[in-house]
Image 1 (cartoon, helix red, strand yellow):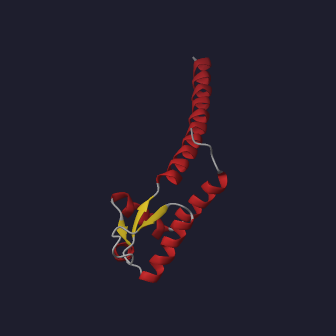
Image 2 (spheres, one colour; image 1 turned 180 degrees about the horizontal axis):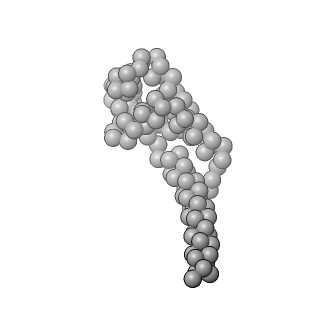
Image 3 (cartoon, one colour; image 1 turned 30 degrees about the horizontal axis):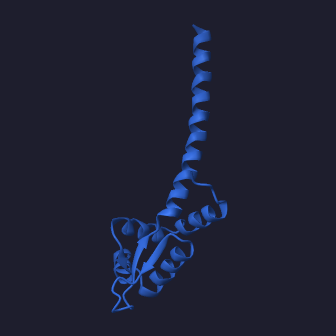
Length: 117
């Protein structure tokens, strides 16, 4: 069971609030990629992509990997599972709340209809 850390959840949501970073996350869901590949795919400059990746790394959503030990200049970026698991867990709690609320509303409406009959 995942214990909710609200500060981490806030950081995750803050990082995902920016559309370009969400697009980067979508691309990394497919496979790990280099920063240049990501910049080209979302049509931003390399320096801007670097800033977006820094935010995603700082908030723990992506990790950097030097795939080829002989060339440390090449950095691959990949998603980290934990922040997304925490976000999913929180969303399940929210969904459960709304299911309870809608269920109570449905029972209320059904009881009103039954009384009319």
